[in-house]
Image: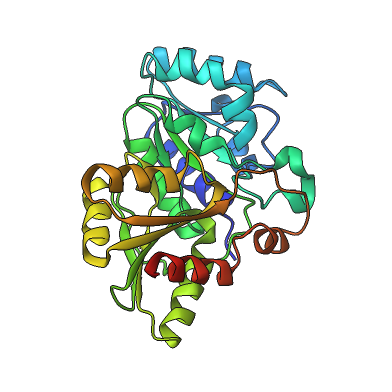
Length: 309
């Protein structure tokens, strides 16, 4: 287990070593974001605004308008919902170079903080805003490289992280390529499984068990939700003829919707969406919640069989 939060902050700190324009803005989220090391090293580039997410986004917009590169870090829902209008009007509309890091994406936060800190609408909200790029790394290593890439991109970028206790699924040497899907494993071409974020470990386990049952799938890591890799998705759907999407997000608006849009446009194919089935989850232990709401390994396996049927 490697903390995606610590990994992302480490990447921001390393970039800040080389670029004095980088500044971190905290709406009372320094501890949650694991950003204490940044404040200690760059006290003059750390701005604490208190529990005021809308203000944090407005401050970021002002700084970006003067040429700075602000990074706002707080809980995913407080950014994308409480400060939604500010992101849309003052960052996305003028295309300012602001970076947003959202914590507790998905159901993982329910174990410690309850339903108010579980967020499965954030990707859908920001996907609807023109010009906002969205990254969803699977583990700590990917979060580190995704944060590096985020700072290289011009314009608004949203980096979605979870609880900070995500399982490590990829080797440290694995590259992160912005805007492209990457094959995580290939057992065959019976179906394509598109997975996003920390739930990747369940998709890989499902693929392994399916292979033992004689069903060979290819698992694609979709770590960039927007812009979505239309070419890569079309290629895999054309090769396999059907697909399954796996995400800790509402089945509407996130990865599942994005893949279905690509299929509808370029390669009509049956796509089964595995995610939160348009309902609110209860709070509880993260793994138990995933199992309870249709995101168990067995659910992914059944979705593949349904797609094949």
